[in-house]
Image (cartoon, rainbow, N blue to C red; front, side, top):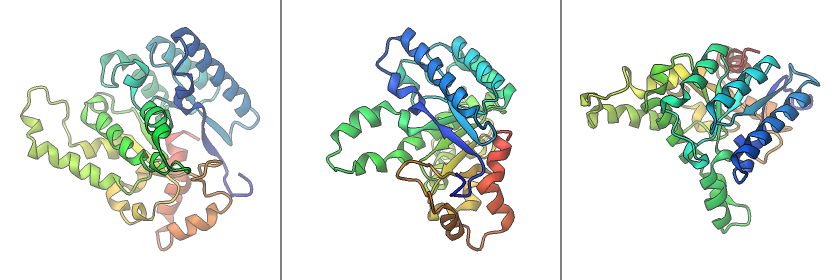
Length: 281
């Protein structure tokens, strides 16, 4: 971090608990608590710079709420949920069973993170079948799966009911987001969503993106050309160290190329300001 000029970092551990998927439910809960405890101890070396994203056991919402309260008491700033809850035998996120979890996250200001590494379909179906030695098919698909994630949160009514809930999409780029938001908004009119009595939204889907959601990126020059459509306050640059996507140890040079000609206040927001605000740093 010192070499790369990074002051503080939000750090992902455990792929959202995907590695515990084969465990029995009771053992899975214990494994999640143990991993979070290890991350708390590790981060205590320098809690202002090392900020883990703790994983939650959504199969038991009561336990998940207690785990949020536990890590927040130890200065935890973020939690991670599975990308697709049905893959862990849990109901979709618009199910009212999650309301106690959304309530505690809204009250504490802790954002939800979603990472494609927790997708069982990607890791158990696509990855083993990928014929390329470098797993190029597997590595290219995160934006596709994050698109479903945006639809889940913005179209289902969850963010309408919980206006203070924040959701962060991780490591799937940003250049594709404006098109998908436009498609969602267009479908509201073309498919007559507002004519249904059970219509859950007062606003178009893009409204909830801009108010409630954010995304990270490492290198995305297309995204830099579409900032006005994505939203400058909805983006956070990420180093992704030590993964292959990482810009380490050349992050400063990468950022200079990406941010060339941009107003300094926008650069500050994307490089640090948005993360400082979202995670209460």
